[in-house]
Length: 206
Image (cartoon, rainbow, N blue to C red):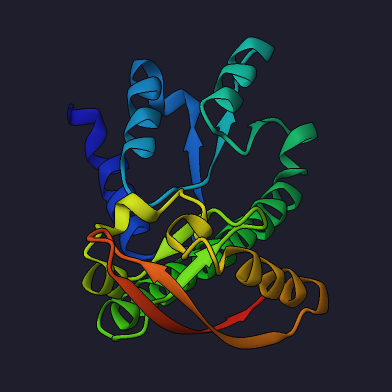
């Protein structure tokens, strides 16, 4: 593992300073090249890398690309001139990936905050798909209907609506979907213990 000391220092630096690019010299990697690339893939931060080589064959280049290399550059005068262009293209890709990761993280954080809010309010919040299947049900549902939330997720929204109100609720929801507007109405639902509960619902499409 002595040959890993310098690469490990480089990986540690890149891990602490994201947004950089790793240039790997194929001749220095020798027999440890696959192990080092696997090490790159094993860390949490995805490090983009370019392989530079004096003797890499086409098969070697294909292997490196399959292992995640952005490009493989031959270290001779003819191909080394392409290095700045390759690096520029790599940084553009890196910036795009970083931006996507930031957006993804922001969405996850927003969802976590939203779940914290919905889990601590008394209002029942239900999200459905276009077919009326519940994709999200807040914790208040269990407190009001004495039915675990997981039993409602994936089920039809209309399952626990009072039979006499089912058609009415479907019509109101369909009107909301067609108009793309909001609506507020009252209807009855039936709890797990067969208790009839009146609700005032406000729905919208987004």
